[in-house]
Length: 484
Picture 1: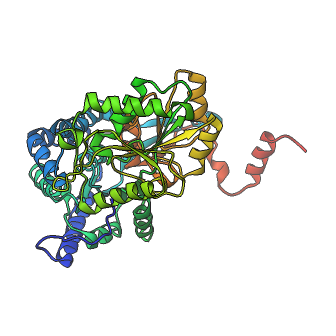
Picture 2: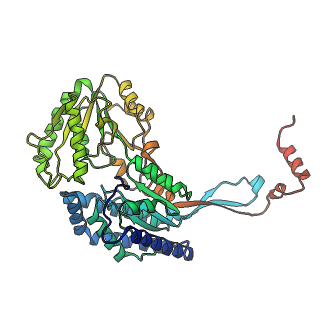
């Protein structure tokens, strides 16, 4: 997800692309100053246009994903990149009027009389969104829903690793929206640097923690508020007795979504030591039934680039060289470099200093880490950075609740994986190294809004005690506070 790596920006020079971004930002800033508070009807119309845009381009979205990934299951394109976005937009439409309504606050009548106090969310202004390559539409148009619901104007910068998706997104947005409302800026590394340095009213970045730090540094120069969705090493913890077909199916089934290229996928799995072989057997069984010939078939998404593929091959090679047992989940799995499809592998009991235990894997490799007691497993989780997602399996609610209370993560799920990122109603985001801020649902609406506190003075108050002369104020205070 690195946005600061060199990449071709197409026929336009870096200077032209950056100048174009500046023109878009100036146009949107001017448009926002002329219309700072779009009505409920206007916001609804914008969300409806967004939904029509996604529905009418469904087939082209699937084609663009195949072009960029080399191989990409069409049903997954529909499920996540189209239906997921539509569900999120529909939820926002259903709740937008309530989100926009003033939220009352208490005002002590003894002091403030009949005054009214409330919080009203107002648009922040012009928002930038630096989009990652793994979900080019879900993570561009998805957050756009709450940004538009909150009344903002938006410029999106797609990843240079997905040029077909980026080009299609620009075409779709240009057809659906005036560029003074929503626009797309296409370019590579130089544009990414310039994009993060713009004086946005808010900036969203989704990607790696290392690049997130650079984005935050650039934004800090303008005191731009940021939302950072940064991923990390998300663990699945199978508590004693929970290595069952249903639970292993959930772990492996989640891992093969996008062939592991998902920020909330399972990065490593903690398994009771005596159940490791059972987990392996169940994982092999799942793949043989659910996705036979996985790496050769339509179920397998290609790795985004040869460089990323070679990195994953290097992680496996390092583990093998260090004596780790590597278990392919296909008997005859092969890596197809033309489509960049790579088979799924388990790595058993890897050392903590191996690359695949230090880095976010982002591919079809799943380390299995045996543990002897639950405290040991929790200590390992807590020794690392806070993950974006944490998944705990078990039938004993007291045990799973204890795991949740003794760990910290951006989101979590019990007896499943990654669903916290799929619910339109549930705020999604990280903690610490895995990010800050939230989008989805009302949390997203509030994230991209300014929660303006308002007081309307009434009658029968004591406001005058805040003004000089303070002799009368002292008398009032004396009557309120205990003597001595």
